[in-house]
Image 1 (spheres, rainbow, N blue to C red):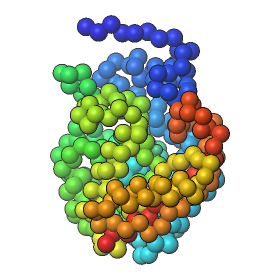
Image 2 (cartoon, rainbow, N blue to C red):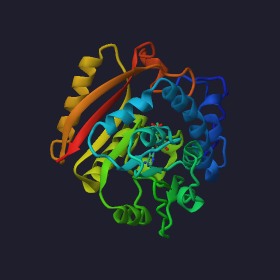
Image 3 (tube, rainbow, N blue to C red):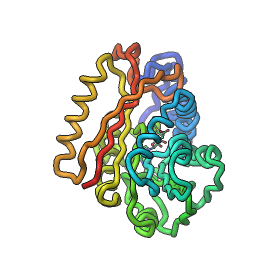
Length: 304
Ligand SMILES: C[S@@+](CC[C@H](N)C(=O)[O-])C[C@H]1O[C@@H](n2cnc3c(N)ncnc32)[C@H](O)[C@@H]1O
């Protein structure tokens, strides 16, 4: 049996967050293995509240929602990685009253917070579905039962991991029909992701690898579920001293990546904002980029 390494809570965490181990991965690694995901989800949900509240007061979500509202007749939205619901609240403020939004997130604590923020009764059978277990190889896995999910109308929140096959979610989305918009705003994940079977299977070695994996999946979902003329809205946190050059380079990377997909890059936008001092960090403290200006870099793709 592997010996458990005990690190001092004061040493810098090995994940390069710049936080002391005791405030970063320690509570997760100290949890019994079968509870690691639950602990990690809770910590992430609490931590993301700092970010999301900070972004909201600076108008980040209102700006992003405005981009969607200005992109045509948008009423049916599939939001992937809904988090604590700040994006959905902003969309509800600017889209027509007959909107239908499906918000998907793998973190049940985020979804419970989203329901509270939005003032809706999310069904526990929709937002607390994952069955977590530890595989014989030691990695963590969440599975999602095949039983029917309930479409709650205007806003439906569903716990699911978009990397995992989830037949119940697929049935709900099939029944919902095609979407006018698919959103992925601020792609990021909890700190125990590296301990999951998904990370092992897809050889995810870093947060950046995980973001690419999720984005890749979201591109497939958007290709399948957007109506022609619908929009895919990808938003990422970027720190740079030259937003023009960085934006151009990132746009080109996406044009190349999406070359064989039915999407046309229509608009790229950058909204300057300040990161909070705590919360979920954008980047390593080591990289010397912490003093750089932060932007929410949004790319709006039109489905051909
Ligand atoms: C950085 S937060 C952004 C939340 C929200 N979009 C916002 O702008 O406030 C990223 C969210 O994506 C969720 N997420 C990450 N990977 C996911 C996956 N594979 N499937 C579903 N949700 C995922 C996380 O649980 C987290 O709540």
